[in-house]
Image (tube, rainbow, N blue to C red; front, side, top):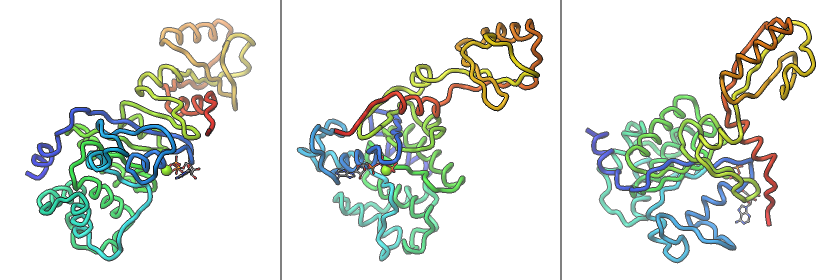
Length: 288
Ligand SMILES: Nc1ncnc2c1ncn2[C@@H]1O[C@H](COP(=O)(O)OP(=O)(O)OP(=O)(O)O)[C@@H](O)[C@H]1O
Ligand SMILES: [Mg+2]
């Protein structure tokens, strides 16, 4: 019952996408989110949330946005439910209890509704921050490193929850250092370096442009020079990037023809970590 309501009542957004923003520590991810939420004022440029200018049309822009902050900020004097009621009050919503109950249930917080915030574990506090971001049913939800330092169970709960929100019509933007998470959850990825976006594309395109399949093998004895052109060797393992699987057959035939015996062999898939490293190495973004 709760989850049917949940899906019906939050599917009001016409731009459904899930994007991730990644970048080294200090790249500017949190600063960008703070500017979106009106917490810091940019020196230059314009920011709009669902076409509402963050500065000129602040109230409307803020109403479109739910932000889950990176830091665990909470008021130690209130219970979970009170915190959510107070947050609802900031958006002028007086009677929000049915919705609050639904959020609590969907985040596994129902049994903690009356617990004081300071009595909750770190993971539970993070769930409350997610709940706070949702009280006004925003079409756009921004999560700043939602899974940093959380245990496996909570990470999976959050992933499932984020997916459900996205499927229900919410636009999701999240920042993460876990590229596996980015690949799994999001269809577009932005990479930031020194305050600038140095890559912005679909996960598929980024993988195609900056990464490839790699044939990795260990041969008995030495491999004749020139036989594995473009390959690198480390600790006895040869790594050879390739584009199409039928190239592998040719490589193995050449090795066999040269009398090389293969002791071990594996195929690595295109990898966002490789994309990240190459984008960061290749970009020359510098702060102004
Ligand atoms: N209001 C501000 N004005 C100017 N610079 C700021 C402001 N707020 C933060 N910074 C600086 O911007 C840089 C980016 O910080 P930010 O917290 O956005 O990084 P981040 O990408 O979120 O890093 P992390 O991955 O560690 O969370 C830092 O050097 C920080 O000191
Ligand atoms: Mg940050």
